[in-house]
Image 1 (cartoon, rainbow, N blue to C red):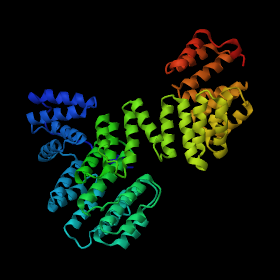
Image 2 (cartoon, rainbow, N blue to C red):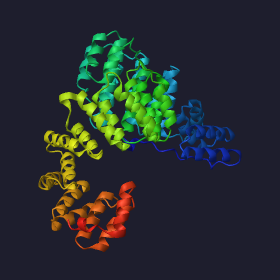
Image 3 (tube, rainbow, N blue to C red):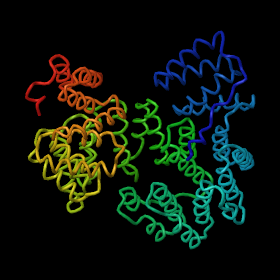
Image 4 (cartoon, one colour):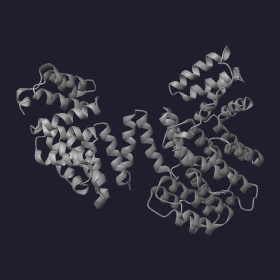
Length: 533
């Protein structure tokens, strides 16, 4: 929904760099393309110093400066863009933050008005309301009248109105307002934390603890270390607003706007670890994994987000293709004292990605032990699937059956159990029935269509099986398994040319044992005993 708010770069009026600035600019562009943000930022700084009025250099210097945290470079670049009146609309957020930090309320108000006139217009009234609070307005929360026409504006206004009510000392009204806003999503969790921090800063400990009730690890951690709360003001309000907007944007795409918002939130409040997490995630998506890890290192073990930061480290290392490092961190999280079923499950998921199926099965077993009676169909399916892929079929089967028992309407569970039996030539009638159920629920899923087609072929029902395999291959033309099944079916029905065509399609993406098996089929066809089945 918020993707349309991504603010494009300004169209610069300057000519491209020339002379002394050109070489630095070109090197910076190359470094940025390689994900070397630090080198790129230094290059743009050199280019901007050599050609201080060039908007082409300035816009890139601004974005790279924000990415690496060189706020001084970003400010210099922004001054160039503002003088030439080509600054992108989102850059005013940095100007607002600087004015708030300087307690220049007239300047902050002017920046907020400018925000209200751009693509992020729904943020403007909130920024103005926090400025009004700092200026001593009688009831700044009253300025936040939720818009009935704009659902985004309505939500942001309502959340900040509740926070402003706490700041104004209207605690009962604020609590009532919060009760209508809070749910179980991440935005609600963030709002609980922010409101609790304000309540505690106002010595309303009971109200703060009520907001932090629950078993979520972040809430538990915050309950245990409330500290002295926070001081209500525009710095806190704008920081949490920018973090909220960055989180919403981050769910849809990693963008320069996400980076700008997270950096600006940290500029306003260096203790905003939620913003630090969001910035690390965005940077790692943009191949700045080392900088992301540095940000995660800055999150104190005493922070309520310390546990989240450890999990985020696994994600960053995975994106950096450091499988060994990611597994080591995930294993530590899974085996730590008091670790949850979710931590063990996440470790198992990572092991599956590395084809370490036996170890994954052990991780899922640990997760099920911790979950107890709460072990759901997903855990049973994952454990059974890991055992099956580890070659321990007899151990896998009970868990796969239990997954279907717990979730008889889940096509994924039906497909796995049905296909695993059909592939082994066991319980073909039962397997086919399970696959028919799965296909009826999800007729457009190529994987399920292939499984059902293969079941029919295994039972000699060619008129049913071949059309389904062809349908699956048309939907997923690069899938190795689907194309191999189709090739086998063609061969067994005497269509040798088409069989080799399908096997060649499968061989394009095949690796390891799959590649060897397909090479043998392309050379010699199916063995007589196999072809006769």
